Figure (tube, one colour):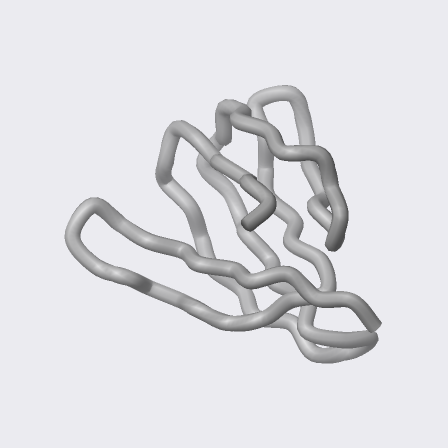
Length: 74
């Protein structure tokens, strides 16, 4: 199964770093899902949950109070 590197950071520290098979966040127009190979994007976020899926059943949850999400292939 393909994975993506996920880094969740604040203005002062790294909060989470790891691999994920899917990332879900609350965008300004609704929920957005990012899978491996997704097109790079920059979008607005709304306060809400961020889920990092690490397989079929394992998920890590965060709550975001931020204004942007950047996804870039590296």
